[in-house]
Image 1 (cartoon, rainbow, N blue to C red):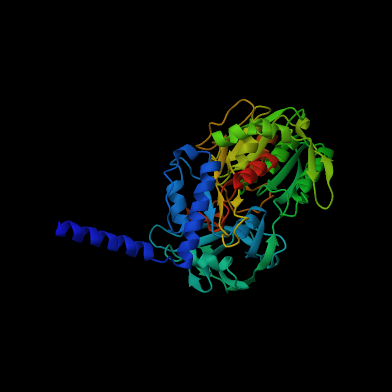
Image 2 (image 1 turned 90 degrees about the vertical axis):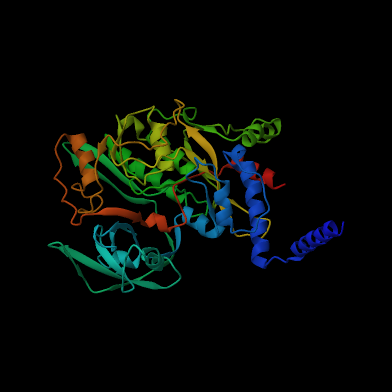
Amino acid sequence: MKRMLFFLCVGLLFVNCKDDTKLTDTQELYKYVNDWVYQNMDALYYWNTKLPASQSTYENPNDYFKTLKYKDDRFSAIFESYQNILNELNGVSTSEIGFNFQLYKESSTNDNVLGIVLYLKPGTPAASLGIKRGDIFRKINGQQITMTNYSNLINYFSDSSASASVTFSTYQNGSFYDKAAVTLNKSANYQEDPIYLDTVYTVQNKKIGYLIYNFFTGDSGDKSMKYDLELNSTIEKFKQDNISELIIDLRYNHGGAMSSAINLASMLVPNLTSDKVFSYIEYNQNYTDYFNSADFKKQYNENPFINNFATNIVITNPNTQSYSIENVGNNLQRIFFLTSNGTASASEMVINGLKPFLPCVLIGDTTVGKNVGSTLVNDDQNTKNQWAILPIILKYFNTDHQSDFTDGFAPDFRVEDDYSYQLGDTREAMLGKAISRISGVQSSAAKSAPVNRMLWKSSIDFKPKRNGLVVRNKSIESYLNRNKK
């Protein structure tokens, strides 16, 4: 009896000690954030029936979020700063070095890493210094980039410092020769235009439209829809120039807003009408029940399970106005898409959505394979919680109910992204291949890459934005608001 009493007392002592343990402020916040995360994942997540049981935990939300993701989910993400990811999705960089890049292992015999410039950002100091696509850099702030330190060094490109020193190199006779280091001043709150280049080529009496489109967003966050309107004007110009062939360059496009994907596809589909189906949408049972409810149907005159092609672009700032979609689809017999292993999501949605209506010829590399979409969720009821989640909430299908490209869209013509020529130069490998398919005339062969490259990372890997198809409309908004009550 005494022994049992002793054990009981010890047990109570441990319980009391545990109850008296005071959590730190950080642990208290993490516990709240994790509870908030689980609540939203349970309500919104496409695979919410696969979630583990809820538990109260004060581990880092990044680690906790990983335990919630379904095994087939490659794309849901969590972010420590809602404002930062929101800016990134709208093409706004707090601190912009001025170019996108690709990292490669320098050699199989050493741990050095080299960077190659993909394209310059217009209006940045870097763009005015003569740096160009294909330039090689090997040092940042005087330090050789290696497999060990590359992440820390690349961070200097986007941290709060005003500038970064970059050492560019030439490659001759099997060796690298460093140039003098260049100090690059960063652009604060840089707003990148998703339309990088648009032009019309005349080849063999054919007018060929060419558009480099680097991400999907309607505007920089001000609801002006200025980027979608600019895209509309570009298509109008193609139409006025009477193009008969079109090349859409999505090799550096990792996705973005579904609304902009719908608008772009609407500008390209033949015989545009507002009742033509662009995509069908599948949600979890929570969404499905709500969208089918009498309450929802009484408030909203729309069908969240179908995206029709758009015939208008509506803006609400500074005033509510509507602009007719310019459409060039009836001029085209096919569309050429230039793709890479980073082409994802909204880009793939456009390709998948147009395939039933006209041939889509892909040139480049196999795409990512993202046939699902997300919505950005933040906590607007507790200012201490600045975290945000981007959970997968839907799967999309084209008008033929096709969505079978989780391995990506394989190119019809596999062409390596060669940096020997500038973007827009008809000798550039991927563009040249498309033009040769159109004209029947072989383009000038691209130069061989000056370095034996072993792909490692790209600049997109160091930004909070990942391969995204971000959905935000009245239907989604109404469900999110309902979930907060």
